[in-house]
Image (cartoon, rainbow, N blue to C red; front, side, top):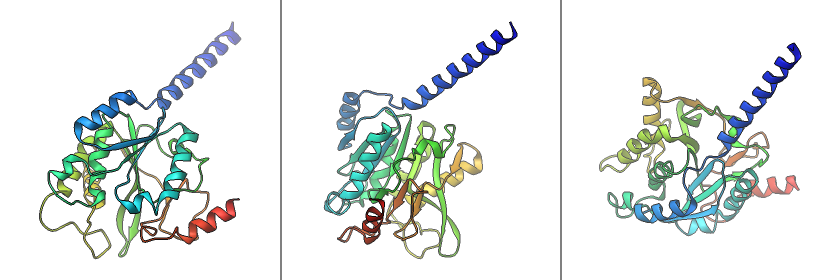
Length: 269
């Protein structure tokens, strides 16, 4: 009898674990047709590059630099998404919500409203830059953070050691929509731009505005913020397979594929 009770308990634990795995796996809340129709309705010109049941990776691919110079980066992300059953979506033109404020906006200003909108259709969305390269596609992003986190982002420092929240790769759930909206609305207001923490120039994109809202949410305990080293930052020779992703920090927008990527790919063969 005692052994039977133990067996039943073990089976129940296995069943509960399996249910949790299935729940985490299915991240999509809407059909592909619904997402496409809603994108048109709300002014988001998108391309769904891969349909998956897991995490949704989303990036902005506006302009020739993104379609030409960073094509290798996009291919690495597409391969990664197919391997892990992730959705992969790009925004190929400015969303209408941003154009209402600025006639010729920087591409980065469409990132946050894009992610906020996607959270109507996905339970979790990873905002990822176009110049992110997948350095180790064996590491699934879900293995790096707690499922209970509302925001997952990397904390680093620039210049005078002020903390910087690196928005080149960040993961949000539906609870984060409020801070995403506040951040992108503030980033579109007229007047002087916020200054990058630790750097002596204005933030023409979304990063500093998002950081301000995340810090406020953390102070008020309104969201669960988790800091995780998701990527190797900047184009250096020190990046290796410990990191799933490698942020090239715009180093390739000017032309040739960065030499560090070529060296890495040669070593991985």
